[in-house]
Length: 179
Image (cartoon, one colour):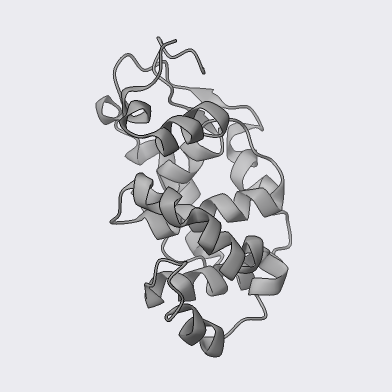
């Protein structure tokens, strides 16, 4: 069975690649959870995020944006002492901040994510890896839309990784059995 090269570096990455990465996600709650994980990933390996994933989900109310929108600095202070989570205050505050944005969106997070591609995944037909792709022009409208709404910690790289994770773009290499 062929896989994207990055997926074979650990059992956790293999499972994530085979069962989740790049599969289209349209549920707003699941989209928000994926965005949160990408925010936590910034500056870390994806393997590290997967190591903390269950703890993050448990401590952060399963990334339920309605519940997280009610959280505040007291919650952040508690999480900063919780070994189950990635203890980065800025990232934790971003999750709460972005939850408040999602909870008050006029249109759904699903529309925000999928409307720019007409609700159809974009296939980049990669032969090696995403490193061969210049995604900056593609991702700019997404980043701009999110930032105009007030989202934070959604730069080009985080946004593109998010779009890959939730299947907006299919960046499995051509030879990957999970395309």
